[in-house]
Image 1 (cartoon, rainbow, N blue to C red):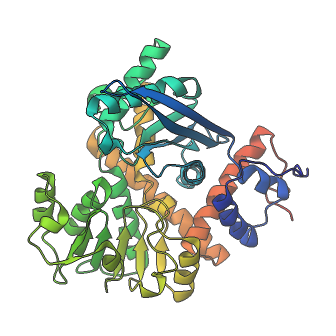
Image 2 (image 1 turned 90 degrees about the horizontal axis):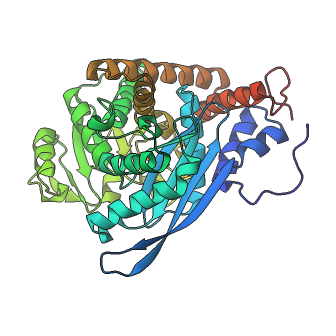
Image 3 (image 1 turned 120 degrees about the vertical axis):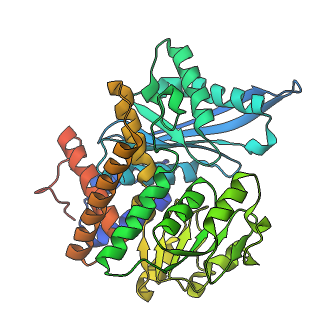
Length: 428
């Protein structure tokens, strides 16, 4: 079966670059690449909103449902002035890979509104959140597409959206959205699940690499929900967290920071740089510190062609989405640095979101201990699968993750009868 000759207008260019690298290692047909290079559904809606002062503003919004071969699509919803269609496509693609990699019965999706939520009052933010859900309600559902929190969205916003969906549809449907407050069917452990999953990934790598954890130095860029909880976990496990930063700046203490003190201060509203600990460093300087492990846990593309040669860490734990550019990733691989890729390292959030969805559909509520135990099972299995493929194919962890995820998606596509593969493998 040959791929159509016309060029699709919705091809994800970044996805195409990633897939071309996989195709160099694992044979993929033109049809397989054609299916994987583009999202199944792209939705763009301009949402008018009456502001508190009576004026009307228009907000651009998106939802991309990339691939649903393995199940209903799943992915976060972000509020950010930088949101654009290409970014949402790429993130939806990565969600499809992430769900397949950790073997969840989900496809991948992503959504967003182009807005700076700091410029809105709380009532405006709630009205915008509800308006988004009204506009997209026909495209979402417990067995269709399930949003979750992402950049600048949280449990409270998910609660508003769930309420709006149930009003529009006239049914109770807690499973339509995850990352909700516990009182609305949220899951125990969801708040810190991404961080715990990252900590499990790092600890499993250290065990396989036969490296001691006690005293290993760590720098974390990004001290939001993910970075702060990760700092707490790693500190408890004996790692020496020597640097952390928020969006403004950071602090560095070679002898190790008092993580409990900093967490206590930031919980009271203090910024990281306002802590009387260590010396002040910029976000850029933090990335280049002489540490064992570097954790980019803030935004994408922070390790790039401009600073890649200055990165000293031997292990990079990607807790942000896409923090290392393609060029920098190739350089670090040749240099011998180990990158624990985002689609594995930060997958704890979507795994516990899956647990939340299961609990909602079965009308159950699991204990925190059960959630964390099952999270560790999923993370360890995914790591072992990645390790096996990396060894078999003699490739980096990132390429191993992509190969494994793509294989699982294509197996599902074939089972649906959408493509025909030769002996379960692609053919050039």
